[in-house]
Image 1 (cartoon, rainbow, N blue to C red):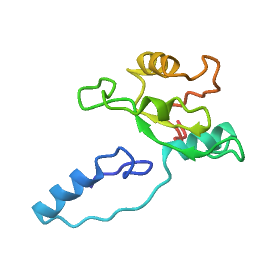
Image 2: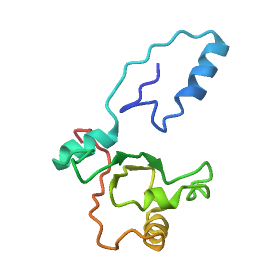
Image 3: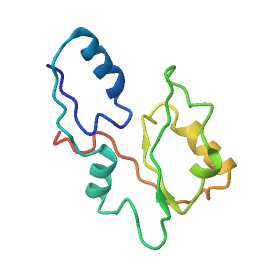
Length: 122
């Protein structure tokens, strides 16, 4: 049995694991969960989409398979102050991510929150 918290379909390697289970003939069940982005926003008392100031929700990873900042991120979209952008797996690359966002037009004083272990009781 393997248990995952949150939404395994958001940067959780769900597709790869399901392929391996199917190939091995192992039965499985997916029990949907809320994403850590939703949990963090709820804990902070902020919406993921704030009308009328947010035009979209975009979820991004700040870590590639080598634990570095992905080289193919859409910096113009990520620096859009009218988008709500939860960043997953950004602990190691946060300073590089923040610098690149500011270099691409995001204000240095743009509102942000940092959350870790969202939705966990301890």
